[in-house]
Length: 555
Image (cartoon, rainbow, N blue to C red; front, side, top):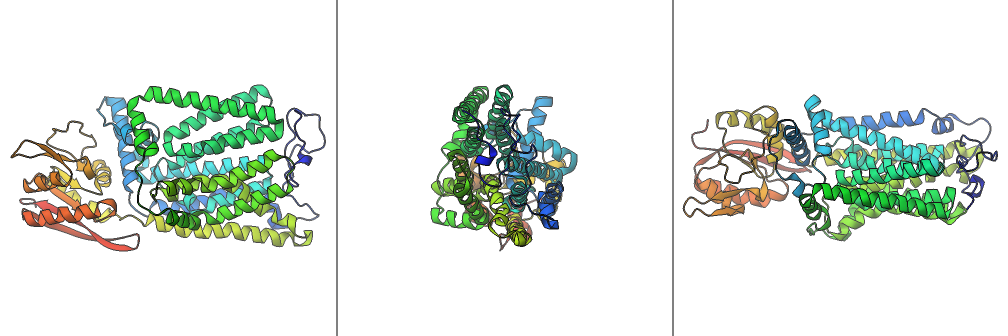
């Protein structure tokens, strides 16, 4: 089937001529920068279509995230992944035994954690967070490239500006978890799929295959990224369909799906049953929470509503103006992607990671949101084009302002542990035995292992008499009276009665707040522990405090 010429597509979406028709002179090889062109474009119009717009947007994006890098101490997940990465490096280099992280991690522990740990070894937590910023900046560059090829350079500029300013982008650009890497890999897979539409069969096949392999790597980095695999594949299929015809579009879909399926099968075969258990536990069979779906959707509207509305406007504009069903469907797919994560998390009734996950959908939605903002000048007289651009940039600025407030608020949602670490360092040097830290074990281990106060090694043997930092239900204890191994709160109670823990740190934070109250009661009843420090903190707008208890005889 002969590819449609750009003139048959949406007005103002000037695209490069298909490679199959290089002799065509109907379209300039360089896409025109905006849908409306008149004599003497104003400075704002020149900036929007100019070559310096993307670098300036990236500088602003970096500034919005950089201030968060030092805004708080490590979050539990950050501490866990960085410590795990160091353990993996020790295992590879020295043969140090490692725990079965793959059975309960929501991403392959051998991909992102070692990479982040390498950055951490160079510059600490700030360097690990800066690595995430590099990923997010690359995601913005890829978004610009995708939007320019689907629509036009002006739409690409606005798409990049919108995405750079949203809260999830600012947050993930300063958060040392595998979300930024997974999102960027999905963006790269999408870019490869869109680029494939510009090339003839041999090169197109290579690009589509690389896109499929990149999808596999994204899914392995963070299993939940697979939710957006259909969107990535759909964008590639519909772009090739529009440029090269239905047959080649369907062929593109078969290629990507085939490569992705083979890659996933190969990865699971290499990982074995332990990785499959981790995927089931964290993603496929994740236990439902109790958060109301309506509440989840309402909060999601506040977090992603601006991009979602702009994406819907862009999709409607495309549907009304485009010739050909492929482009119309493509616009709908991109706009719908904004709501994939909220819908999935409403299904399993949980807010956990929602703020991060909406950012994945916002990347896709920003493509059509950018086109919506670029199209404003096409709907008004030429004399008012500069005014229309001001309105578009005001909308992009609103996304950044709201995003700044959201990201800053999210970074204040967990306690700053600096004072806690200051209090624990001398105590653990004087009394270096078992430590109980119900909600902050990973954070304590990350910071104090760096100071050589706690070992980074994870002890595999449950019979071990010493463990670095316990967290949650993973702790077990042998009752000296019966010889029976018990778990949960009973294990904590017996261990406290027998003076097993030298230091106990309680925080009344997050999931272990109720357990902390019970453990505190056991400590008070036992009377063999004394309160060594009470450190107030504010998290998520609520006041509470860390309590550090030490066993009798400690200084």
